[in-house]
Image (cartoon, rainbow over all chains, first blue to last red; front, side, top):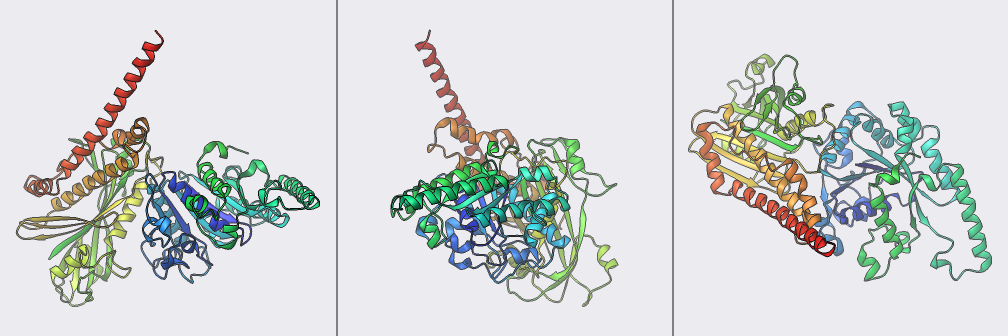
Length: 304
Length: 315
């Protein structure tokens, strides 16, 4: 299964949510890999706490590979190479957790050639042979990278793939997320141009809300009644807006609550962060855990 | 001087095993050339051979620059309708000329790479199987693995396969070097999925050497994969029924494929036998297979006694 992670804008928490989902999926006993296709700023290494590739790799990164500069991209075994003690031992029953870092200072893809698409097809086909889940971080907004994977998936009709669109729970983000999917040069538009079936592609796209503050959350206990009433009114307004833009509940795969840890530092939230040091909220870990299950649960992906 | 090759082995990307006739179609890389199929003791299909022209540096342990020009032979194989391989090799010989000759010269010698300049066979052998030089050859060097990987991709991307493989499993890569001399064989497991083989055989090189390496690669992949599946089952760490369910793919798809030395010529069987003594491939395979079967038997017993218990309670 290939899962492409994209967001309408930067700063939505796409990378941190995507990495936490693959981490949880690995803990659930699956072999997973994470491909940092965010060529403008490959920072997945930092989130996995692998300092040697914190800002991408100087040699054999994904960008080098796609440009044909190396036969195979570098792989980092997170269980072996992470600097974080809590990640360095593979927990019993957990699957492989492999990061394919981007190239340091690689820059966005500047053009989409047949060779680049061919290399992408070869890479994703091989990874699909050995990993239960491959998550591909496709960066924010419309890009050559998004076009690249749309072109590549057309050539691999038998390999299942899904798209996750990450967006924050605000008016602008809801409108932008809808635009990224259905707007001009959006995912559907470009996908159809490359030969995808519109309806089929639509069914493979789900939204994930990030940094969501629920009106009944514990953090809001100290608020005045007027503030709570105002928040509640905003929330229902946003819900109505999301419904109108096709970003509503039916198209949503999950939501990640606002968590101070993710606001201050992008990192994996381990059970230790929740239970021992108690810096992260249990709800956040539970939300990642549930998304990690839903991502492969066909009933969550039935036609809209 | 020596022969170097690399075999990549993986699970055929199909939900079940494929029939002999499908094998023929999947491996029919070139129109008009036939796919060779042998049926006993296991169905083994071999594609026609294809050539890749090369003109590049050869890997050396001393890191001295050695240029090789010629062609590499590649082929694909499917064993038991289930295990797919991409295999490439080249005979490395000294060139009689000191410059690159017209391509017609090299095309008349398929599978031969001619070395321009001086080089010692040991330097090349060490450079390729790399005990001293870990990791893959860099981009500028002859990379037989890249060629073999692409040939395996050709099989795996065949539209005749449904890509719904019963389990996910990595490919393994076996890099080998064969020379003429006093018979000896050395098989080494490296990190992850890398393996190397150093073989010294009496008499001149024949394609039977390649058959041996491919046979060895098949069985090393089988053993590696069965080990992974048994590890994933977490016997003892999970309830018996759950462990058995995780072992099921091995029973369905792997356990009947073990046929060591089935395709190896008579005069080469001592090489296999020596590997059977040490490290003992079949010994480890049998112990794993027994372990899987014992788990299934124990689970059956548990189910039977649970059923009997339920019967006693509600007569």
